View 1 (cartoon, one colour):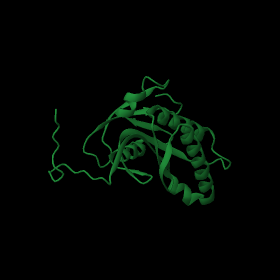
View 2 (cartoon, rainbow, N blue to C red):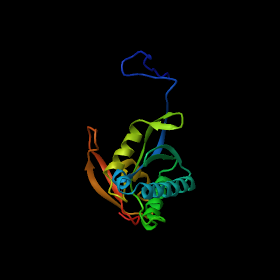
View 3 (cartoon, rainbow, N blue to C red):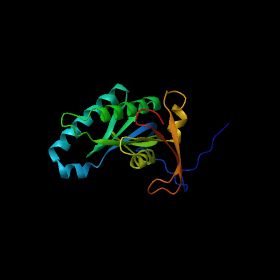
View 4 (cartoon, rainbow, N blue to C red):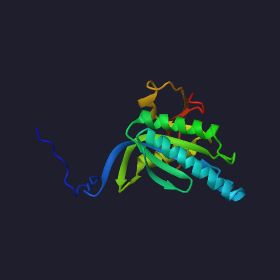
Length: 189
């Protein structure tokens, strides 16, 4: 049996040997109210950010993930396992919420997790998969975790975690609504 593929110059078919793609689990995290906190107490906020980065980097490494990108008060991490990504997010949120750090002024993070196709550009990840994880993060409550349907489908019966279905939400700059699930601050829905 022969498979026919369109020619590279066919409309709608673009293949480039310089673009590498992969399916991965993306965790996007961002500190809530970071700019305001910097205005109020720059050094205390910097100390809290450093402490939070340590919590994130240690947990990500424990769960076999890697930090793909950091920008200011946020980060993008990837995991080969959806279960490990969700477990990491729960662990990080618990630690950040219970340990405010030496200054007593911990930062509260919002986390979004999506399983999707990404473009690999050096050590960085780009594309729709990353964008959706970031949009989920921006919709999360401070201290909260939101996950996509793809993540929920992979983990809902593998972890002792309750998920709450939040309904169909339309992320910023998206045409379509997507199913969104939350994990409670204590690891419950």
